[in-house]
Amino acid sequence: MVGEKELWVLSVLGEPKDRRELAEELGYEEATISDAFGDLEQHGLISRERVGTRSVAKPSDARCVEVFQSLTTSNPHVDFPELLTSSMLNVLYYLGSEEPWTATELAERTGHSRATIYRDLRTLTNRAMATKEHSQYRLRAEFDDLHVFAYELRHHVHRVRTKRDVGGATIVWESHTEFLIRTATDVNEENYHRTGLDRFAEYGLQFFTTSEQYYFYSEDREALGPVEFVCHLLLIENDSRHRKYALLLIAATELSEESLEEAATYYGVEDVVVSLLEFLRTGGEVTSESTPNWEEFETLAAEYEVKV
Image (cartoon, rainbow, N blue to C red; front, side, top):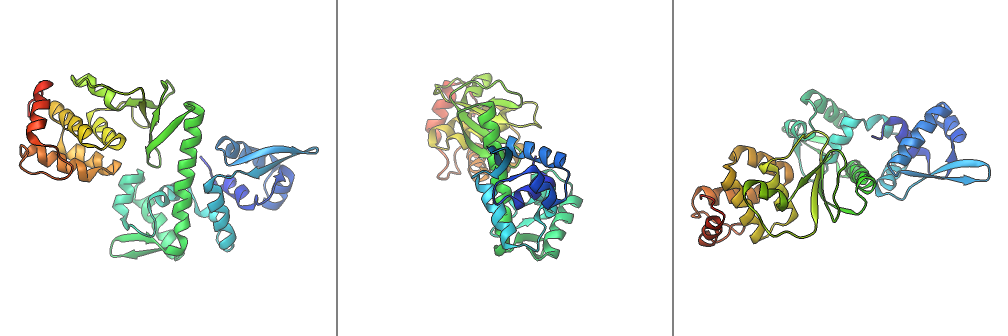
């Protein structure tokens, strides 16, 4: 991932420069600059070209590069490369100026310890970049580009990885470490897990599917299960028909409501999942805009021999 030395290079790369120029400007060895060039180029954040006898680097047109260089130009007194550690970038991926977050919520979402989260939040509040009200934090509006940069950087890295590993694919959903893609080809690369409606067949639910395929990228999960398949389906297509299919899988596998609601919160589909669970629990007595007609659902469940 992009670290401090790479960010220092980006911060001063307003125009094409070679290794020697950057080494002198930043006080690094040329070998260190070469390493930074390699990492930045791998992530699609710079490109290199020959200018006469010199090999120079120039920033890419990625949105995250534009935002970062704007931040450094607008706030020359802030050493952003030192501020933006890996844990800080993960915090800022979620923490913006609009939605407040508690330290506990950020710890759960990022996977960092609460001690690490409190340290990063304290850094932001001490620098007057974030505010704390009761137990909730948010960025000041004038520093919301920190959130934009952290988000755009992760999004860009995910796109570069997808293009390298898969070729043509569309990112349907993403977090700071995981993402869900739609593609027309099989994916056999490591850490890509097949998901979507095709996986419902493993539970006796065989549906007609399109030629599009869905894969979930995660370096931390060894396998996916019905909890993930329900949430992924609702991310892929949250219409009446697919909500019925999600209900069938919930009923067929007798999923833990607590586990499903926790996963739904992570994926941002908690509202529809809570409605579906209440609909199923009450035998269709409690309905919402997200729930189907109970009689129609009973008929569908009977076709697949699912008890409801």
